[in-house]
Length: 266
Image 1 (cartoon, rainbow, N blue to C red):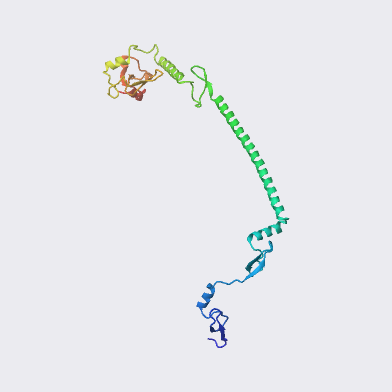
Image 2: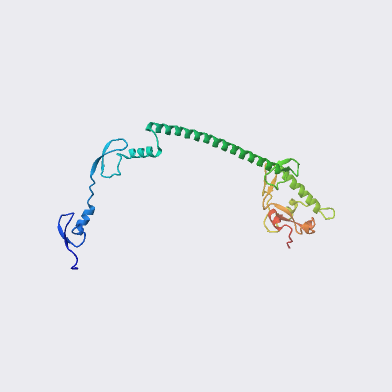
């Protein structure tokens, strides 16, 4: 210890015990210091008078505490900062302002409803105009019967399935008439039944048996054939200068005939 340091006798503020100290200390050891820190602080209570309502109350000895409750404090600050008159006048002003605000909100709500209704009507009218323009654009005459019809598919040419069938039959007859003319050799007695009897119902392309019962007749009277239904097959296609004669025809499945198309098979 330095000899120049002055040693003093101090009294512990916690336990009252005298102890030697060389600097400013309040407690004799760390235990007294820890106990003093954990000890609750006693705040003296004094009698005060509320600056707003005038009621007496017990409060801390602090100059900043002026009101008995938070309500009195908020009311006092509101009156001082907003410069209101009596409390009744303040409440009346609040009621009047509330009524004005509700009235304004009701008027604004009605205006918004009108604007929304007008906007909805405008959208519906615009949608209807576009729909009518679309109908006019997609309405055209049927190529078979000439009746105007509407169809969302722009490539549709006929108004009904019946007209579609008639058009297909007409085009098929036109195609056949162009392929089979007077310059070609045509055996008009060739039929599917005769070919079936001649070749015992065997398809010459796949070697399997043909079936006349493989078909469906719709309610409109149309016949839809299946894959094994017999058909007339031209060995050398007519498009490749083949003839419609007994030497150039054979029996084949409808499906096999479609797969062969206009190809040569030897």
